[in-house]
Length: 129
Image (cartoon, rainbow, N blue to C red; front, side):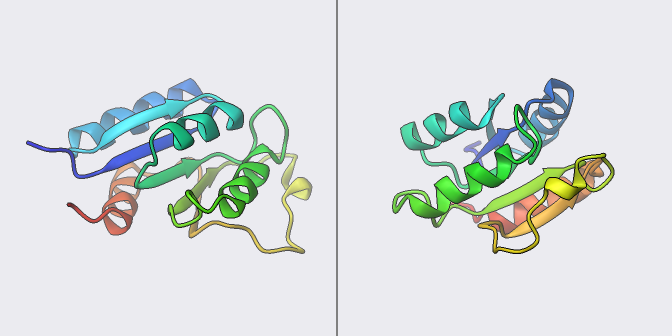
């Protein structure tokens, strides 16, 4: 069976990445994982995904925000849907999250994300080819 689509997870939490990857692959998605923003952008430029699941807090508190801006400014990537998945709301770093400017994201999910919710979101953004 062909994959439903290609999803790129950009998150420095290996446990989240592995759990999400396993669930998404069981639902017939092809999944790649990047441990930081630079690696994720390089992977996107090498092979454009159908959906990006992007953490906010990685090496820097706003790394995901910077990555979303890079995606928005790249004509080849700007149409790729981006879903931010983060625990920033519950962390002591919530003040770093910008609320005074628009973000290039299509949805925001708080961690921990129920796996069924993650699958529902992925299926809503990725249309089988």
